[in-house]
Amino acid sequence: MTWGYVFRRLAMFFAVVLAATTVNFIVPRLAPGDPTAAVLEQLMSRGQQVQGAQDIVTVYRERFGLDDPMIVQYGRYLFNSLRLDLGSSISYFPQSVTSAILGALPWTIALLSVSTVIAFGLGSLIGALLAWPGSPRAVHRLAPFLMVLSAIPYYLLALIVLYLLAIWTGWFPLGGAYSVFPNGFSFPVLWDLAYHAFLPALSIVLAGLGFWALGMRGAMINVLGEDYLALAEAKGLKKGRIFFKYAMRNAMLPQVTALAIALGTAASGSVLVEVAFNYPGIGYLLYNALRSSDYFLIQGVAFFLVITVAFAVLVLDLLYPLLDPRIQRL
Amino acid sequence: MYSLLRNTRAALLYLGASPKMIAGLVILALLLLIGLVGPLFIDVRLAEPISVRTNQPPSADHWLGTDSGGRELLAVIIAGTPQTLRMGVLAGVIGTTIGVMLGLFSGYFGGWWDRIISGVTDTMLTIPPLAILLVVAASVRAVNVEMMALIIASLSWMHATRVIRAQVLTLRELGYVQMARLSGLGNFSIIFREIFPNVIPIAFASLVGATSGAILSGMGLEVLGLGPQNTPTLGMTIYWALLYAAFSRGMWWWWCPPIIILALLFIALFLIASALDDFANPRLRSQS
Image (cartoon, one colour):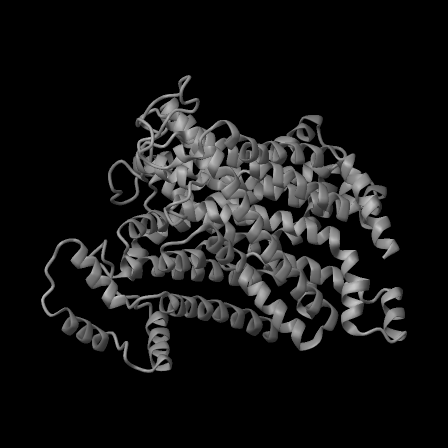
């Protein structure tokens, strides 16, 4: 791995963080209306008498530095964002935005990473079998079913799964991540966590399975024409060895690239899955923030979503040369 | 120009015989019919809140029942399906147009332009679209369908740029492009008259993909309650249904139809995109 490659990937990571911060900074300022006046209007519309409204506006403008030049405000915003000071939350008061998000983030990361790994692994295996001439017939019958599955988005699948397996049959809990908040790790606690996580995870796995299977099928078809497979067969290698070590291993490379690209969409989708299942990750936090117009928290969730995915992509990119030594030369 | 016509004919012949394409188009046509023919039989004004009795199960008067806000749900579906489609197509067309342009220029000119455009494209691809859309939609507040389409379009050009650029990189080295360059044709003529016709199948596949992605993003915003508040759309119907706990109250007629229609819409677009992909990438074709 060359330093130039590492440096470029790191630069990309910081570019993403910078872009996210800039969007968070610019967009609210482009929106019509003064934020402090908007807050006052909100107070007044709830029937509260606001004495000396103009003074309050002046004080707030000064306090938040809204009268400083834009570039100064931007610099300050950037600095605060980078040390994760994203203001305080209204709906989770007195928690700060960062601490509210850090409390929810582990749930999201655990749910998303476990189910993405399962969907990626299982989907790739099924996809490879779909393209492999020697695989059993039953596998080929799966193809149309997987296609339909890959077309239906996470959220709709989550609602269907929720209805069928939780409301209609009552086999699984309606939502939440635990019966009692877990203290320490024992077998019943883990069982309870897995029991609650099953349906959200199932939705994410089902929604992702078709995508990975179809991608792998395409990559595998391209690999099947290669000469080294014919050679491996001519040498008399076992079928299983050719399948896993020769064909699948090479077809996996584009899948890993696709994983880096798909993570962003997967994260967006799983945020909505959390909303459907009241799963206490950042998706649920976001839903509460939206319902109480907790603007700082909305921005904070967006910011963390972007950095988490960017970080995962960075790790994948840095691992990639270990899988494919040719990447160094790029 | 002649080759363009011939290619179009070949494409139509191939796609006309593709079962995926036919199935996708048939579903899409049925969904379009809901919006076109429906208003002739049903008064779509009943899709407004407080126009009928609330919480009625399906009956002879209200085929799909009514919701807790006093909307007739059949009218909501008839009024909402075309809105969802319009938003998706609008965002898809704008996004793909931008994407194709950037892809053509970046692939053809190479050099610094290419580095900047593909750097930005790759970076943007890793950003969860929902994150940016949220921030924008939450601060713009009162959005309408067109505005939502514009916001979503600004995040749906990257895929087109990527695939078009890759294609242009190989096309520009081909003999006929070199020939056109040697014969003194300008860069823009080469891009639009020689290269562009050859990326049309891929551009079409990206258009369908971008439309589907735009509907997905739109639905994401809507089910979070950030969609257009005054226009009935399928996503907003699901949002209201969840907000009023239609699931646990057993009001299946409220949430089932929008989910089924959205799912059918995504399946139709997927089938069409997949047929176009098969056409553009013959190696996949032989196997399926």
